Image (cartoon, rainbow, N blue to C red; front, side, top):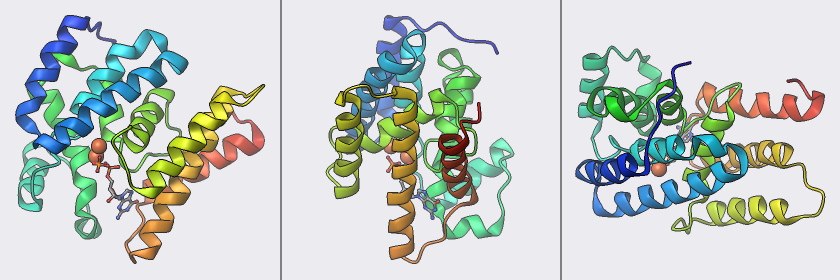
Length: 213
Ligand code: DGI
Ligand code: FE
Ligand code: FE
């Protein structure tokens, strides 16, 4: 896979450029995801820290757009969706942000960065470490106060600090817990659960059980 080298200076430029795409509160969240992704990257993927920063900076660039605009992006970028997805409009922004990042920020992205953006909301089966980091950073970044986020943040960092921890295994356990919390909420709200969310959880559970990989 073709990998882009991002200098610290490019990351600074990107950090300013994405500001135009985000409401002020979302920008603060985005900066916090960037910081968290860099921290997790230092533990799991040190050579991709700036790529993780880029994915974090770009992950929510279409979040402010309404359903009409999301559907417009879909036709513009050839994003295929089925009608059932219209009942989960929040899921569009991950797909449309990935496509918009490729168009508007081509000089800052490669395939791995785009896939980090694409899968940041639902996850998917066989998530890469890169995708997992973007997803988890979004969930546990420090400005999040939602009780599940606080719980997952504590779970992850307590585990990291525990003696003899297998970090790769703990990351998988944390991913499973995140899906448990999200799915629990979706059930509570009587919302549909996306198939990729279910597939992501199933896969991590199998990996933990059978040590596939
Ligand atoms: O964009 P953010 O708010 O930073 O975070 P996100 O991209 O993880 O989006 C979170 C929202 O997505 C939250 O309201 C729950 C929703 N969501 C996540 N997985 C699913 C889902 N909604 C449905 N309907 N189905 C899912 O599987
Ligand atoms: Fe998002
Ligand atoms: Fe986000």
